[in-house]
Image 1: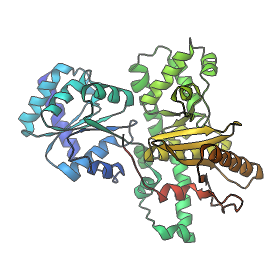
Image 2: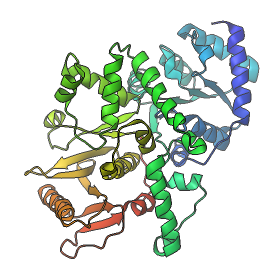
Image 3: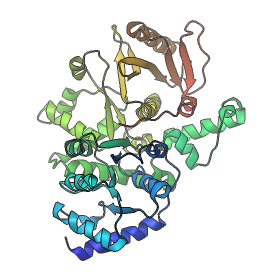
Image 4: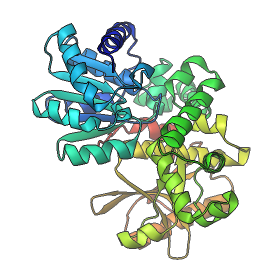
Length: 428
C-alpha cells in the first residue's frame, strides 16, 4: 500500500477522532477500568454500530489522552492494506506522533494475519485495544497467537439503564414506589421495547438507519466474508430467524423450506450469523454436554428495534420481544445461560448457571392475568425447581403482579424494575 495514503488516512482519522463525541458513558467502561493496569490485550467485540468506537474514545479520554495511536481499519482506503504494510504503518505513526505504547485498533480483523502484528507489538510491552464485529474470528485467532494474554469485553446495544441515561432520565430506589416516577419509567421501557438500543437509530429515529446496519452485517460480515453463493437462501433464513425470536430451531425444516443441500449448510449459515452478532442461539440445559449438543436450540436477536424494522411481526409476539430483552440482559450479566424443559416437557425460559451451581430459573410472560397463562408459568417453574433442586424462582412480566401466596418461593417482578435493579456485568 502506498506510504502517502497511509499517512493521509492516519492524519485524517486523528483529526476526526479529536472532534468525535464520546456519547453517554457505557457500563462496560467500569469493567475496563480494572483491566487497564493489566498487560493483556483488551478485545471489545460486538455487532456493527453498537458503539465500540465510541467506547474506545471513552477509554482514551479517561485513561490515556495523548498517549495512544488510533487506527480504524474500516476505512475503505485500507482496502489494499496487507500484512506487509503493518511495519510501514508503525513507522508512520512514530514519525507523526513520536514513540507511544498504547494502540487502539478498530475493526482490525479486516486485515489478513493481523494477529501476527498484534502479537509482535504486544510482546514489546505495548498495551493493545482492539474492536471487532466477528466473534469467532477474534477469539480463534487471538487464542492461537496470544494464548492467555487477552481479555474479551462483549458490547451489546444500549441496555435499558443506558437508554434512560441517553434520554437523561434519572431514577433512584424511591422511583419504583412513586406513582409519577414509576409511570415515566414504564413509558420509557415501552419505548425501549419498540426502539431497541442501537445508538445511531436512537439519534435519528429513521428506519433506514437500522435497515442499513442490517444490510451491512448480512452482506459484509456474512455473505462476502464467507463467500456465500446461495444469497437468496441466507437472506430468507435470516428473515425467518429474526421473525421467530424466542422460538426453537429446526434445522431440518429450514433445510427443506430453503431447498438447501444439507442440515450442515443451515448450521453453518446460522453460525456465521452468530459470529456477526446478528442472532444468538441458546442451548437447552442438560447435565451431559454431549447430550446438550443434540438438543434443540432457541434463537434470539441482537436488538428488538432492528427486529421490528426488518422482520415479520405480529402483536401476539409481544411476549417474545420481552423475552428477547431479558435474554440480552442476562447475556450482559452471566456467562452460562440456557433454557430448560422439565421431565414432562414443560419449558422454562431461562436457566443461569455459575460454575456447577444453578443460580436462576426465570419465566418471562407479558401478563399473569389469564388463569391458563398463570397456571402454565407457575407449574413449569415449580417442577423445574423441584427437578433441579433450586429453592427460588422468578417470573418477569410487563406489569407488576402480587406474589401468589400459594407459591411463596416464586418472586414476581416487572421487567423494567428487574432491568434497573441489578447491574452486575461480566467479561469473558
